[in-house]
Image (cartoon, rainbow, N blue to C red):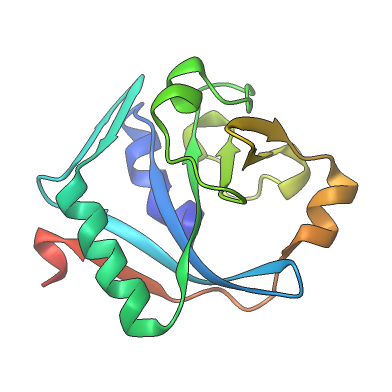
Length: 156
């Protein structure tokens, strides 16, 4: 669901994004919902992505309604580079345990294996890339696609 949400932006040569809601049990986060962002509160350009405070408020309302929390986000970068940019590190959401995943090639290749994504976690005010081993015990990847929720002007 996340890739399908980002792919239309990637086809225009722009970064795409989807937010992830989930639950943490015994230190393992399971993503339960994908949030698509719509309307004037989201700006997507080739090298720029911005989400307004009002749109994040709508996401918070969805999380409360479904009994989950904002666990992370996935966004796309051009080419094969899947580290966080300086802007990602400086301006992105930073909360302990928050997950920031980067998909390569502007999410234009839906069959890209998870091993080619960059998984990063916020800890102690800094970002750290997760090893494949650590990713397996910190985050549950389930076979069933998480349902898509819509936040923003078009979601109401």
